[in-house]
Length: 115
Image (cartoon, rainbow, N blue to C red; front, side, top):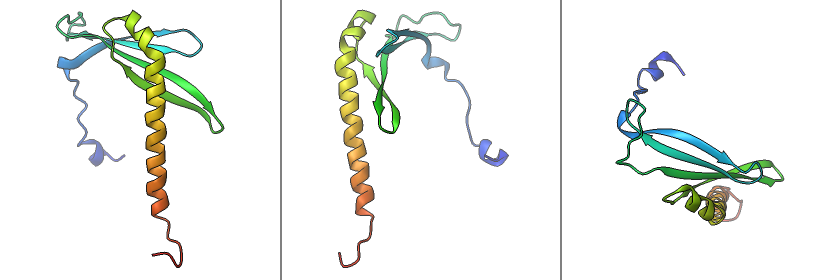
């Protein structure tokens, strides 16, 4: 990137939507991030709810495939309970998107004699 291209990039931090990140893992399958809202001083902002995000990895012939999805939970215990189904749903969505991308790419291939 050139300096001219960088001059149009805004690196300003939006202090109205700051979060502190906490991480939890079972060292096997699950990683859960808890994003705790904070104010510009780093104090917890109790007027906003925490956000939970789950991540895992699947082994494929091409290597590890990261999977990530929102965990609509009110607390950590709920996030743990929701994790398996949320990761399954995120995986299914990713597979669907990959199929759509492949279909779109395949439709761009020109085959002689086909109109």
